[in-house]
Image (cartoon, rainbow, N blue to C red; front, side):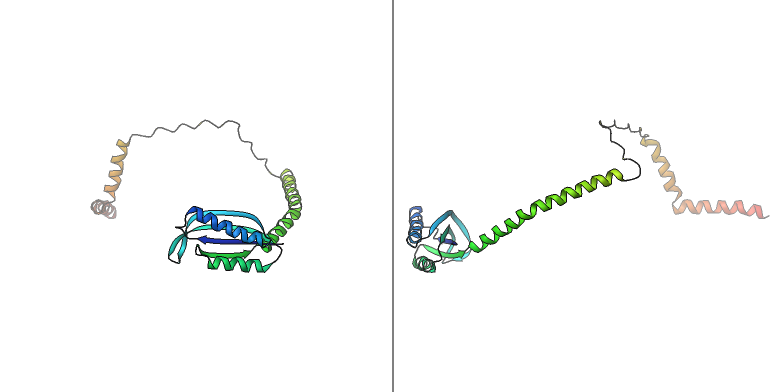
Length: 193
């Protein structure tokens, strides 16, 4: 059994009734070819990525169907879509191989999951044993209730701190340094006499 997905885009200015008629005609072609329609997705009007036959938007419809490998059905379906005035773009894709690959990957994952769970449980048990055997200080237990906040010390008024900063800044200016230098020389001179 092969599974296909047909996607086609109808003209955006097509009335809804004619869009439904186009969908029904595609379903009739599939039914006459012996295909089973599995799913129909009508996305409605959407913008196109680029201009196709002068249109910037289109009415998107997707149909998933399965058939017994009769390729003449796909050829007939594509021929009808190609000559239809309402269809501006179409594509038929075989998706059963992707579905098989996905099912196989899910089966492998399901088979591997119990082993991964057992490894995770073993690692957790080893971690608990290592924690229990670890020498050293025991970890302090945290109090159940949060500790009360420590009151902050009152800060000194900013008034007296400003003159001290001003004195330090004045002491570092070049004029203050040159005024202090002769005083140091005078103190040094009498000691030499």
